[in-house]
Length: 432
Ligand code: PLP
Image 1 (cartoon, protein in one colour):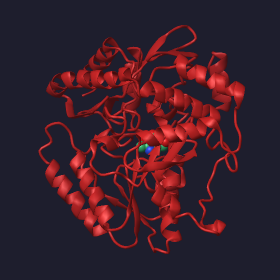
Image 2 (cartoon, rainbow, N blue to C red):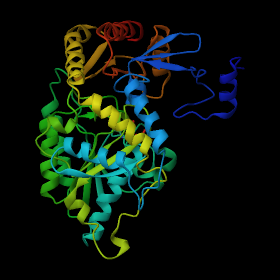
Image 3 (cartoon, rainbow, N blue to C red):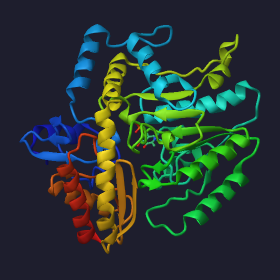
């Protein structure tokens, strides 16, 4: 029985995500954050090298974002967003639209990554319906993760999480995902097979494809080559279907560019953002699309409209956090951090690849991942044991099965990065 009073309350009343309470160790009580570090009540420091589920960009409790939220809270905390608007929502939409690729300049707010995806899927399906087209099928890639709501689960294919709901999910055609890594000899054959499967799946009934461009996150930081993604987009467009980018994880600089889309020639029709949107301070999602798609919802009848919304749509505090985070994200210092972290990972890769228990090393911008050969699968004990191994070294790293990855906040220091790299080698020695 927990002796810490907070743990005792937690153990009695709180239900944690992705946790088997019977076998999981007690959660760690965090009371403070600063820079890339989190602190327990007794001052123990945990270096957050996964940006707290990939949301934090500029460090914990960053004063610029904290101050913006406080100022907004004193002016307007919230107002319903049907029939009302407010300065932070309109300004944020305009500032994001100016940065988004192509003509993705019409934005719909929601609450998190899953809802940003739900909105995109519903928009794609309803746009076809409104236009009188019988496009009702969706395509997605094997291994994709788009969130835990029903639409997002339907479009995802993650490790058996969805087994209890299988007969409740809607019909999505899954394509093989040509994951690749440094020195992969088979990448071209895998891409050719995936394109062949795409051609077979495309038809006049397809409304859209959804994908995590360049980097599948939850599947284990699995990379694809930009030219492959561009080719997929061209073929999907050629068949008259829409392309939805799920940039919930890749957005706001993780790939070394503001968007994964900036590595590509083609531009998606819809783009989902969340996680880094508020710098990791408050939950919010955005689904960006084109004016052309927006106009598919024009009409005299309300039935043509997009009848979707949430109580907290465009919450002013979250918008203020996102605006403040965007100030920091678009600064030259942050672009410098992307380059610095990318260069540090790249310099470390040869040593990592030379380790006898390491395989399939891949890097995309600020994200570095590798598999520990012989360590167990997703959901097995190994990832928990690895987590404890890293925690004992003062590091928050949360492997996906045998995939260990670093996805740090951008203000991480070189010394802190080096600690992460060394721990990765030590884990490979200990667990391989
Ligand atoms: N899409 C991607 C690519 C993600 O990585 C995630 C979360 O990990 C989601 C969607 C779901 O986001 P959320 O957890 O905010 O619902």
